[in-house]
Image 1: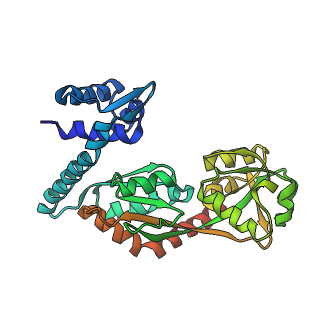
Image 2: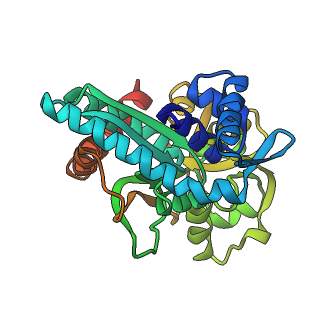
Image 3: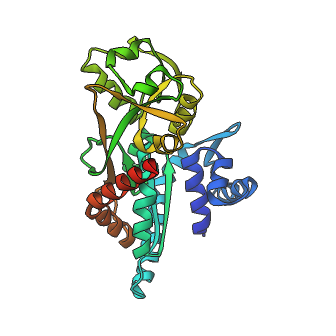
Length: 314
């Protein structure tokens, strides 16, 4: 009979499509991951993965058993939850897929507050794209997703979690740094560093500029980066100007490495949502976390923005 630990290796390898990345997540060696997969393949006489150099893809057999493996591991988590219930203790894993820069700053605050009440809970946040979160929620590969987009699907429930602000930052020696103000039309003559096209930040910025008749092809985008911290560093070096989440910019602003510029008439904000699959039965810990996230929304928003103000003012 196949061990639960082997099924977990299979699931993570299927998610990562790379044995090396799976090994890092599982805190195993790459050879241990390969051996686990090979032992399953030999035991049942099937090929579960198609090897393509450093990457792997699920074979037809692998795709067939993937939902069954997910069901088995979900049942195992429910069983673990039941044992915790016997001792009136909430425990188990909470896995969250996150696609937003704001979410990366928000979730540690939310999860640490939750873990103070339930110290036996093991939170884990995985950074991934919005499309990946959508697909993994539908396939029940993750119980929760945090994105700046509402998923329009009958099986998915989305609740507002956090209100994020997008600001314009420039280097300290930029002509706009001293005055601190500019007009939307002034952007047309500036080298701009942008997030990838599918990001929530990019969507928010372009929707705001659309009201001023500014389209993507009118901007001088000199660099596109998928990491908001890398964008802040590029701005600091004078590569260009950029729109980023205020939380991303907080440290650079506090230490005087970058400057904030008010774009007159342009207020950019977005809502960050937490989502779940209505058909996915939650463990007790997951159910409590979902309710906790909703109940703490106002407090978390206040706590984060108050700490942000204190940090930038110090």
